[in-house]
Length: 226
Ligand code: FPP
Image (tube, rainbow, N blue to C red; front, side):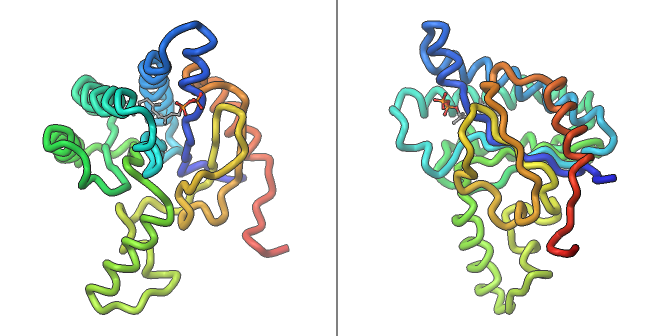
């Protein structure tokens, strides 16, 4: 039976969730952050899941109104601060992928502190993709290899990615009804099983994730074989 070791999620639909309720878009992000907590806890308590990668901010998201970008940055910093006791209680190690260089010093420090403080936790690795683009990460990896004078191949490439050792994505899920990858995890998701749900991210529940995992277990994965 397929093992769900690495789950990756494109968390879409926060804005629509808020709009439907006549609230500003940022309220959807706030509620979305609560869903992040619930889904992370569920994954930490499921022994089979080793990595949960969440698309929190893409390289394209800077194009949003300045006030929304600022809100997301503040929300992220607040989330990481509040979350530390929960990470420690649930055994979650915090990691990121993406280019952190444009973020404020205060957010960068919070990210570094959270990584250090959770480095020995071993039930789940929660990876936030921040200022992340799949092509951007591949180009960065290729440049790192180049700088070291290493000739890249399919086996050694992972060691040059933003956070090495996360492994292949098993389940790639997108909420919010759109059916596209939006430049997420292009290298690691080469053989991922894809799932799309119309549920908007703030409404997504551990129960729905559980049913997706059940469905995944029934799929036949051939990895190009017969
Ligand atoms: C997509 O919804 C969501 C984002 C661009 C940001 C994801 C952020 C969160 C889930 C909350 C904060 C995260 C953390 C880790 C604290 P959208 O705004 O594109 O929704 P729409 O398609 O309905 O407009």
